[in-house]
Image 1: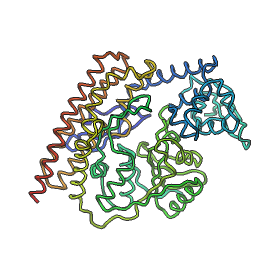
Image 2: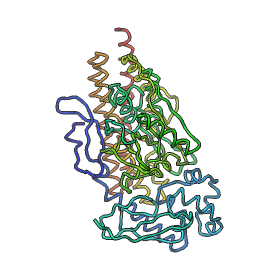
Image 3: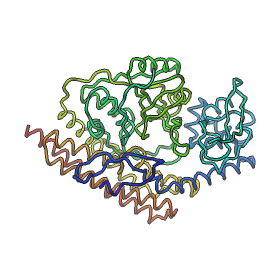
Image 4: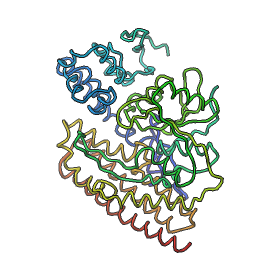
Length: 170
Length: 340
């Protein structure tokens, strides 16, 4: 494919394609990613709709928080079971609210570590569905352009989380 | 200590990009397509096991093989190590960095928090190069990121010790020996032989060209595996993602392979390979057509049999073209042998 047919202006997601240059040689071309450049809104539509439907099920007591976060992070049952180090059979039980209630705190902590959330987030929803830069399942430095952002930090107490609403000074 | 002087390059693919950048650092001038081609990275596999909820496919060889096969065919030696204990793994990494040795590590892509949140997924076979450290942060040369980035110690450890399929187990590698002279001609031919074998000779119905045909036949069944329309749309979008944007260089690695063939024609002084590189570029264009078609179907959410069969038919054409291409490449190789 010729370079000019691959060029896409999308600075947020750059990739390298190999393409035909004007002199007929082939080489790398750094440009915007085709998929995100063209379909990012569609991606947000799918993940947003999935998130809302899972949240609704969680609020209605139809699924457990483990089921919620597993889906948000796009992990499968075998993948999550292997990461937590339990059988798929046990995991399936923990996906329902009834099975979830029988979990020990120590096992819950193991789940939380693998799902990259604080244990406290198994029992509360911080609804930031409109903020694509923050999600309880993604522990990271917040880079929000909004006036306020949520910061959740672990403390020395492994089960205690400190949640702060911080004014964005930038 | 701080950063080791290291030439950061963005690359099409993380593994071939990492190997290329490390070798360039070590003084071996080599391009990413050469690394990819010599290591026979080109491939196809359509995979659906009973334990899988949904079928998937691969357009490249198994993770790790690019490094291993390249090393075997060129005489370059890498030292690789896995760890059970994260502290030991960190110490080993730090010791090497303190000796000014950039080190490639295998990580779960999810924890690479220099990328935006929406972009990060759990994939345990991402390779990055660590090129220095300062306090609790590490400097990273990631082939998928335009600039040298930073990652904090906790995220790096989590990434190196994520569990699950292809768990990295703290795996790290770096080159320890680069021969003064490499017989590039032989390495290239071995790489081509490997590619022919990948695509034509594996006697399993879901690998190589047979795998493309199986994909073509089975794609019409995809709606029955999906829980709902959202899931199906997401999976069909992934066809585009896997072919174009998950580190393939476009056209499901076929553009990258075309670049390899063009370079190989110069090294082997064989103009016919240059002609064949153009053919491979066109084959890649066809793969891109499939990507575009899949994205269109996913966006419109019209998963009718006709639409899916349309993608299947495009796949069948790719299978036929690749079968004749690799057969021809095989003949070219045996002719080449005779003329030397």
